[in-house]
Image 1 (cartoon, rainbow, N blue to C red):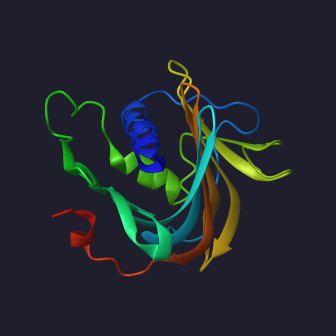
Image 2: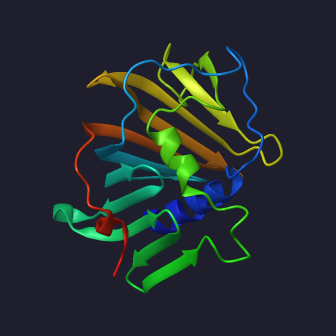
Length: 204
């Protein structure tokens, strides 16, 4: 259930945040980061999806520039139940029914799907976002946050709980919303710049 809803939210966000105009809210018009520019992260996370009800689960997340992304949703005893992966071109989703693949170079998608944008945001790049202090459940009280918002669709991504690790500022909370659906990711363990082989981002 969580995996299907997660995919339903994340894929549209990959579409919406490709080349769109991102509108900030309060704070500086452009977020500013200092320090190292990480190339990859590996995170253990708690994932929560909310529509009418909330569903929570654990996940392992791998992110690597320029557009590599993998999310493994875990079941009991750490068994991988579902996988969402992108190698920068192909976006794949694995579940009990097999593997579904989207080719970002397909004419129907090439103008829109861009995993590189989401990877950049998850690695703490502030470009295109508005820096502000948010209150409420989208970010912890008083947290400095970076908000990315598509003014046409209303879809938004908010990253917060920025922590310095090995000289890089990495967001530990990620909030995504689209058409009444919300996804929250909270890192509970993080490694910056691990060596990750590119083949792990392909589901065979």
